[in-house]
Length: 215
Length: 341
Image 1 (cartoon, chains in turn green, purple):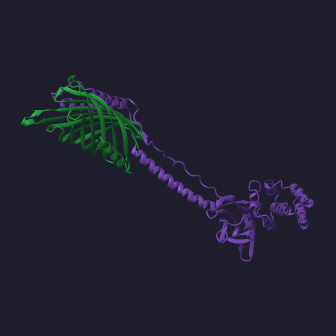
Image 2 (cartoon, each protein chain N blue to C red):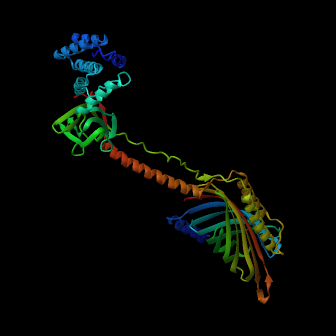
Image 3 (cartoon, rainbow over the protein chains, first blue to last red):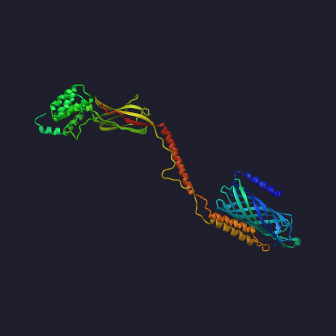
């Protein structure tokens, strides 16, 4: 957690030091999270909070997001509540009007450990953002998660994520509200004692928050 | 009067001027009365006698005119011409009224005019102009072909502004500048037109007043005549594009998310997806329903930019012209005196 906060601080400092930046935004989010693993009954959901730092310079867009949520299992037998913290970093470059290629990474920590799988991954994808009005935009994103790493070991076959979001703000960009959905599916397989076991992971996050633009 | 020509005399008398200006000299008045009573011998006697007395210039003019008419009526051409010559020297601009006197008298007057050298009908127009950029016309006529020298005298200046051979009417333009090219100082000047023919010369001065004034400056333009600025922003008509994009994005993302859900993990509850999808759709709907934002019109912006550049250029030219105008002098020239030999 300390690493995450340290990283965010560094990003904020790096962002504030860019004189030619077009937009720098900081925001706080409320988060709703649903996490599934192994089978549909073995899920958990909960709420939490998060934050975002965003920097736009020309065609380049940098974004760092973090959330922390407390999840409650659905099954009464799984009485252990756990906490999930995830950091996502994305860098995108606009290649055509409304279309950008995206790369980045992510890491999800679970406490207590082994209550769910911790995951780290690299993402490669694309994002389409449309300015539907001078003050509003809608975006859709999709990414392939490259070689996810798991706390409990194993490897992944299909690993993708999708996103949908909308932002509405003031014309000068000082203030904005955001609603964003992220869906992640990782088909994890583990091999305890040489035996392949399918342990898929699926997660959906909704964020609603406010952001403040500095430039 | 010649008794043998009563008919001719009668014709001449009916055409002769009956009313002459009132005379102050009694002798001249008696000459006029005699002329009115067709006592031509008496008219000549009294007119000659009056001329030997101290007469004003106006009375001398009337006396010679009376003699001219009387000798004309008596068919004494030589004496009539002599009287008219004296009249012309005294007042070159005084002419018999062709509507009221007989053609014979008119022709005698013309004959007298052809024998003398005088400058007639000298006039200077009223004019206002920027010094160095205009002139005032000086009009005159000479009775015989001669050299006409036009001078301006006054305020310490004596400038010859023109010298030319003239026959009949002519015109000279006076720029009201000194030899150095500066405007003449304000004051009263005499424009003297002198006709020279051999040893004969005749000069007529006309008094003019020269006044200095400032040249009006041109006001700056706020717009170019005939051109108006175009609106740089226009509000497009309301459209459903925002909602369409939101619907498409939501459908794409939600459909893909549902399709990608793992079969073993399908929970059927998709609160996150539902909530954000609703937010996106509402955003699109509101953006479609609200009044669209004004959009810049590049062609109009460029047009206005060119217009402003033209306006700025024109105003810069006006400013430059005004700077010059503030250094210039507006000359107003008004004739202030009558012509006379």
